[in-house]
Length: 237
Image (tube, rainbow, N blue to C red; front, side, top):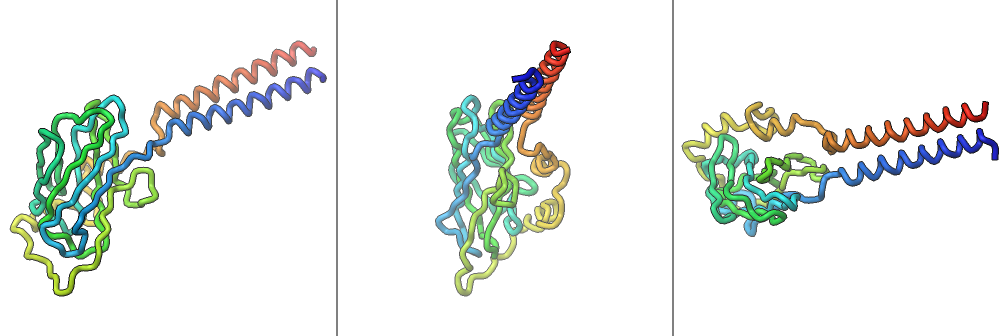
């Protein structure tokens, strides 16, 4: 085999190595399949005093979940939600557009399970609860996408049709005020909302460290290929 053929074969092998390595980095950097699940034994439109349970899955083996921030769907006012059960020491706080439950970190790798009681579910087919899940190391998982096939989908509760004769209860005195600060489905959330700030971030599903690692692999491999080509070219002269 001539030196030129050998050089070309070496370049081809390096190109394949670059592709394989980059693919491996992409696969290992992909988000985990964890998510937040929501369920209720009374998931029916216009049902009253409904217990809704959430299961926030842990994605970390080194840090425990310490806080869960939820933006309520349209039709449920923060004042109409009461705390049910949750991790030991956790407390419930109503916000302008939803609520927060937080407390001592649960054990690393363990899911955070809690429930709330809703005064009345709205007349809808499904309810999306955008959720921010924070760990003891400061990391936050953003389960806020309304597309169920997305990488970080918001938990969605499917509702059956309202019972015959069911009617919407009168709104609580604070509901009108809460709706004035809670965004509708069409309006953007205020920039001060943690969920709104999370939605403005677009990392393409990969962390900055992952992209840096991919770039470094490509640069090093390309440099090696260039060096070999020049060296063999000089030898053949």
